[in-house]
Length: 269
Image 1 (cartoon, rainbow, N blue to C red):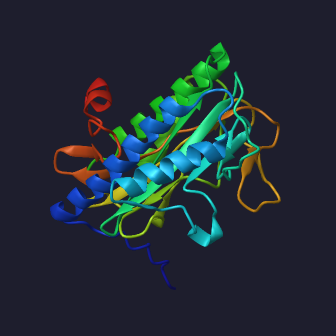
Image 2 (cartoon, one colour; image 1 turned 120 degrees about the vertical axis):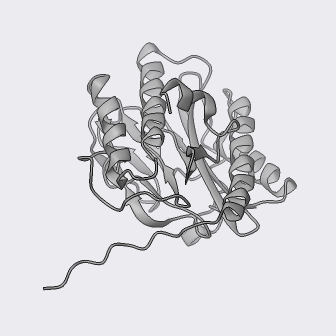
């Protein structure tokens, strides 16, 4: 009888994690620039150009551009679009929209990857709650990313928080991943599941954690463009992501401007 081999997880030295921090900080700053640029009348292609210019001007290379033929520097997903929205000149933001902005950058061969979802002007109470639930579930997942834990402890932490907040659709089939010298590496990190499964987390591992949550059901469809994933029922969706490293002192969030200290402290990590 043959046992299935577990996927190898790339280990990083402290020096390599510092290089990933440089990439992560560039991604984090790019997303803050994009956040301040979101307003009615702006196209998702406008945002894409802002992101590419900022990344290149600061010594980075866009991770997404050309990835399996993807044409954008960012993924810009609006309203019912969950992930992988292609930036377009005719996709104009309007008051009341939600736009998810997913960004990756390479610095000295190392990747950073993060995402935020931003309301265009004023969010409705339901939209605001969706954003809060999704982002906070991300931080619960990150807080579970400590040495000695199992991979699905992060998945379970994300799902448990979302379930505690009401009836939301937790997207399946898409999730977090390993990251380092490539943007997407083993293993896949689901946003749901029982704890205590998968590889044991070790100091030097790096992951991108990214919950995607719908106001409606979990069901999804892929558009004919071969990239954009939408909610099957047309409901709003939110997506947040951070890249982090497992360290002796706990999770170090490489794409957060403060390395996640404030939010992790709130969760007593």
